[in-house]
Structure formats: C-alpha cells, structure tokens
Image (cartoon, rainbow, N blue to C red; front, side, top):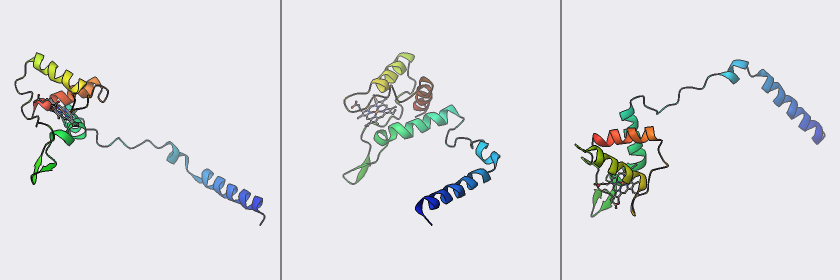
Length: 121
Ligand code: HEC
C-alpha cells in the first residue's frame, strides 16, 4: 500500500470510531468533585494540612526526634479577642521572614474556614 493510502485508511478507521461513540458518552455529566468536604470546618482542616502542616506539624528529625520547623499552633486562637484574631489573620496573610504569606492562596471564604479550624486547635 502506498504511504498516502495507508494514511487515508488510518483516518477512515479513526473516523469510524469517532462516529461509533454514542452521544450520551460525550455529553455524560462529570462525576462530582471528590475531596471537597461540605462541612466548612473540615475544609478549614484540609487547608491547614495542605498549606501549613509541612512546617507547623512535626516532621523534621532533630536529635532523632520529630520536631516541627515552626511552633505548633495548638491554642494559638484559644479565647482570642477579635483584635487578636485579626492580627493573626493579617500575620498569616503577610507572612514573615521564615513563613510565606498566604494572601493570594485562599479566597476570603477559604480564609474564614482556615481561621475557624485554627480556633479548634
Ligand atoms: C515554610 C514554613 C511555614 C509554613 C508553610 C507556614 N508557616 Fe506559620 N510559621 C512558620 C514559622 C517559622 C513561624 C515562627 C515565627 C516566624 O519565624 O515568623 C510561624 C508562625 C506562625 C504563626 C504565629 C504563631 C504564634 O505563636 O504567634 C501563625 C498563627 C502561623 N504561623 C500560621 C500559619 C498558617 C495558618 C499556615 C498555613 C496557611 C502557616 N503558618 C504556614 C513557618 C511556616
């Protein structure tokens, strides 16, 4: 078979397969997104484990012990006044010399969820 005929035959076969795909397969609804919890607190927890745990939960081995790179956030917002909460939020948004800022990583709703989770620590 000449190369150009071979190409035409291949295109014809591909075309036949395309026509054979039933319409409903192409228009099928996507499955629901997995991993997005309905509970806002659970989402806040997910943000924490995605973005903060690498530093704020012990993992680094120092003297044969797992130690966090950054202070544990346990109780950081326990009984916090609204001013203190605002300060902490701004700190997380801005970051520091040793911590990245998260201003652009979260929508304000996601930030609220994260803050709500931090209050439970
Ligand atoms: C790259 C490592 C790193 C990541 C990631 C990180 N932090 Fe930090 N964080 C630090 C360090 C280090 C400190 C200690 C203070 C300093 O050096 O700025 C700190 C301090 C803090 C403090 C102040 C603690 C206190 O006792 O006053 C808060 C609150 C905080 N981080 C929240 C967060 C949150 C929330 C996230 C995730 C959105 C996060 N951090 C992600 C490294 C990190």
